[in-house]
Image (tube, rainbow, N blue to C red; front, top):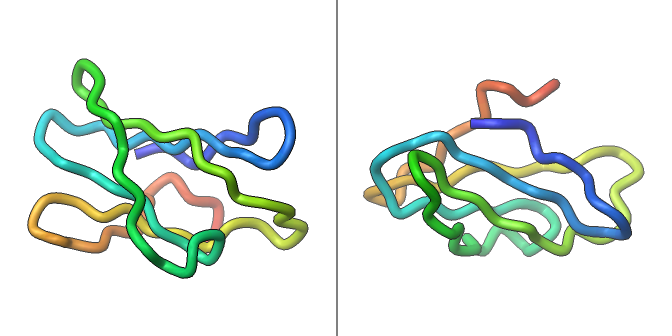
Length: 77
């Protein structure tokens, strides 16, 4: 997993390094409703509108079986 990477404007990239899936991401930017990530070759990714986040993002990755996982690369919990 990888800490979300900010992009131009108010979106961020989220990546989960996993051969299995599906994966989603949910956080305070979407009222904790999981948003589906797209499968790549050995990873899952999503570019999501996160709005203005002056205090950072609160989020978790949602893995197979609806398991909510904290991002091990996050700077804080």
